[in-house]
Image (cartoon, rainbow, N blue to C red; front, side, top):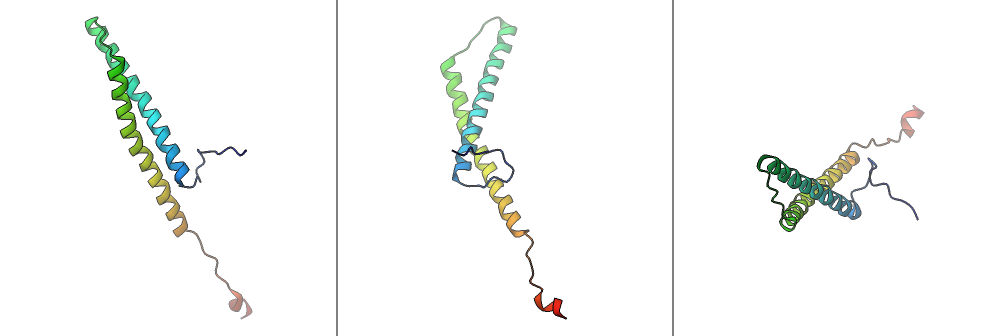
Amino acid sequence: MKLINLLKSDQEGNLNTLIMLIIRCMICIFILAMTGCLLGRLMVFFKTNALFFDWGKDVFYSLKVGVSAGALAGLGIWIKIKLQQKKKMVNKPTTISVSRLELL
């Protein structure tokens, strides 16, 4: 079974790449949002000495932010990959047959 390196710079922009980008972006943004909620609550705790942390609301909020922003970020990165592929195809040098010019 071949391992797929999804971090290569010459990765094709196919459907598998799109799905993996969206999932990875969702997970990363969910973790960042959850960490932000926790750090915000801790800052309030140090100021007021009262910890108001509702796991259900904060996880739901972080999940909502992670899904919406992660899907957009993953899609945006995938579109950038597709545009770079098209640019590479357009700028690809073509070989010119010089059979008659060499004879002269």
